[in-house]
Length: 201
Ligand SMILES: CC(C)(COP(=O)(O)OP(=O)(O)OC[C@H]1O[C@@H](n2cnc3c(N)ncnc32)[C@H](O)[C@@H]1OP(=O)(O)O)[C@@H](O)C(=O)NCCC(=O)NCCS
Image (cartoon, rainbow, N blue to C red):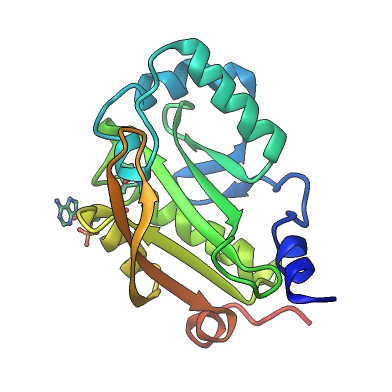
């Protein structure tokens, strides 16, 4: 297989839908159209989407399309707070199109502003990282944040990822602003070296 087809193959997700994951305070499950109202509640906030590269949702209809997209792709979990039963955000494990190695994944997340600062993003992302390495056997998982996103930087550090550098002019935000991306990754070997769970055969 030549380099072009290898890169193309890597872009095809190898699973159709991720399973439900549990943490102490959260349930991570696939989205349902009934989640649209909860998604609109947090996604219309101009402090949330632009930090992750997407525009605030202008209508509930827009949120419905996004939820539909999540359902079709099957690579984004709804973050459900056990205490309230509400969807408070999302966490995704996507094919990392910046890397050619097979099964490289990229983690991304967003939470409603009311739920920031309680360790929820870190709790959700840790469960996703465990799934990526222990179930999907990914060789590497990456994360990227815009330079001014100090909260996300902190989450990524708490995941044990290594900063690789800055990809300049990597992204164009919905308003046309060109942004750099700070790049991080953790390899399977690094993860297993710091994990208490024995690797699966
Ligand atoms: C990034 C985001 C998901 C973090 O969610 P969260 O649940 O608040 O994250 P956590 O509570 O697990 O950790 C946040 C950390 O950032 C720190 N933090 C918060 N505000 C900060 C700031 N302005 N500067 C530096 N650190 C900050 C917190 O103290 C915490 O670190 P600590 O545990 O060492 O105290 C949330 O802020 C968000 O949804 N932002 C908008 C969307 C987004 O940026 N997505 C990521 C795109 S890369």
